[in-house]
Length: 221
Image 1 (cartoon, rainbow, N blue to C red):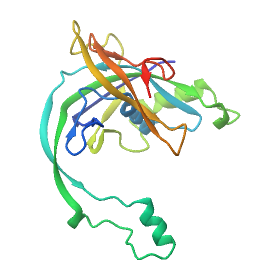
Image 2: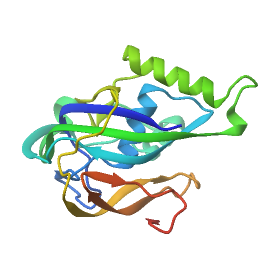
Image 3: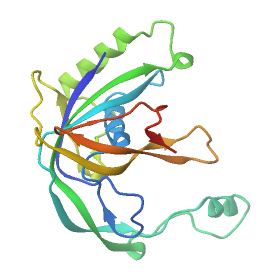
């Protein structure tokens, strides 16, 4: 059963991985970011959200901003050293490690996410079924409930959400086709010691991105 969720916000940043220092957003929300929004609304170990289509309701608009970021991370090596009696400190002093970075972000974004879920059979309880999960998701959308605030790429860019009210979905580009190039599809966690990114060729056709299935030839690892 398809689920249609309308999401919108003032700013968004879906950072391109090929940009190392400065942050540059993709033109449209990525499938992995869309899945993250649905997980924030309703996550269950027995289901896996699959993004089918992304409808772009507002024109694509960029804005240049500067953001404060922490430049350091706590590495696994430091953690292991402390466990073994080392003298490293396991905290980050943001007053000393903070720095400003330029970012090219999206503004005034609005999308409709069309998705469905697949059952993860080994994680299901005896009374779990598709109808139950559909009803829970519908109620959560109606009441605006979520496990944590959904966001558009960064925590400070909050995402509002609601169920699509029905009817035709008016996109910002009804008679246009755009090739958005290679876009991040998701991360491949099949090997926890070698997590790899997956990409696909995103095309905006009449304001809609059709997301290929995970195991199709259109998804590159």
